Length: 314
Image (cartoon, rainbow, N blue to C red; front, top):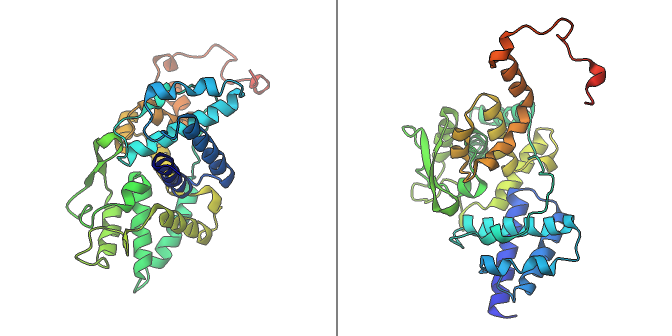
């Protein structure tokens, strides 16, 4: 295997590990992504990781015999791959804008209900409120408080320095995708949970969540959350670090958060990415229009106070 092929293969493996650990992607999807990425690497003479936009523009002709759904999946795999390289600092640019964009329905993110989240925290509190809680339970509390309370990415969370979160620091400054800094508020609950856990972190440790090789990895974080879901009586297949980040966004938006503020906290370069969360509380948006719009003050015509249920299909 050439050095270029080895580099592509290694980075594809790292990307798929992230997708499994952080996003909870199904095994069959991972296999499809692996085939898509390795196939693209072959087409591009094993220069996938370093491909330029003009080189990616050659791919549609190679995919011309495929149905649109297959092209969409391949393009999606590549976009996610280049987003991963950019986020990890392995590329300073993202050439994926050159990829085709077949019209596809955009999948809504998996979400947790408030009741689901309550069950997770009830499990944690049953352990941390004991007289002498186990250190790993305190670590679990700090991890979940930061994931759900601040919407951190898994990669950002596990790599937090030991002193990143302090009692006198209601926020942290993170460097996210594209090397851009953003300010992330940290709740009083999260700071308290981190303070309790940090008492068990060696003073000389560099990371807040250390391991023998540096800090805990995203795969380990994924396993920790799945174990918590099982203990809480929830479907572990529906919960991951990324799902908790989605829950942070959806619940905050439903509570009245400004979309621009949410975009900043999540570190989205494009507000269109943040707008996907507006699906979760469409009923609140409808109510807002009915109550706050100037026309809401005008009386409805007689007999029009309710919608005929038989017309809902229209």
